[in-house]
Length: 319
Image (cartoon, rainbow, N blue to C red; front, side, top):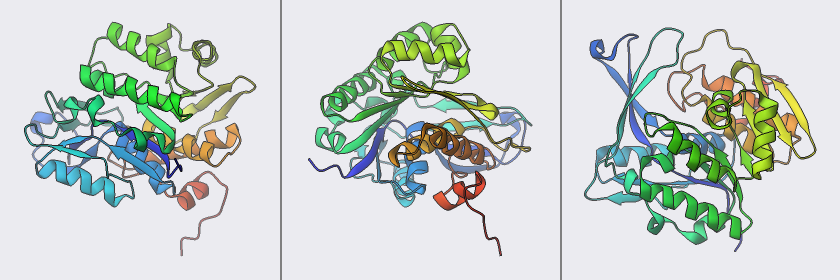
């Protein structure tokens, strides 16, 4: 089949309510409505960078489900495989923000429409049409059926020479560490590209040393390991290359949620363009840095002109 998509991804996206004020959630009276979901974040960031991307999930057949589909479609992502559940509702997430710290998040997603996604919701031809399947460790955490869907999607990808990209994205509000570790390492064994953070290396492998993290994932079978180092940048390792790439320091951070998803999208964008690993990492660091400048999960993702100006490839013309 002709490959019409560059990247396909799937997982739960929720309606996000972000308080207009900083402080405990119980004192927040006004909220801004947006969307939040790791996989849709990656899809939107890639679409903004000019790539042909597909995202699918199950949404409640309600106002929030319609809203999510509309927003993601409006950002240029193919949503033709999104399904609607007549019985279950769309999930909701609230943020609680404090000055200069990562926000707390509160999920209202138990028994949501997306938690009932399963193998039956996979369109094999759609998955086969992509160059890259991107998955995260969040989807297998939301239900047993979603976990089965992730493993089946990976199996389809591997059988059809589709590259598997994996962000562990450990969420301990969704499952216990022992269970997360077992499942995530099984997925990692089948991943071609993996995006662990230092803290995830510590939880999964017992080390936060970027080079040791990379060594272990290479041993598991990953071909390319990209260790996220926050504002310090990242460490990239393949069989033939090892490189640290400095990040782009940000003086005023508005919101860190979504930065890791933007980072993954930036790297995949460079990878699809067949750039060097160093340039892929610069793209990744750039998108991740730009994401934290704006409040919201995906609102800060740049287009390609903005990204290349930010990382110094081109000069911007402001007026």
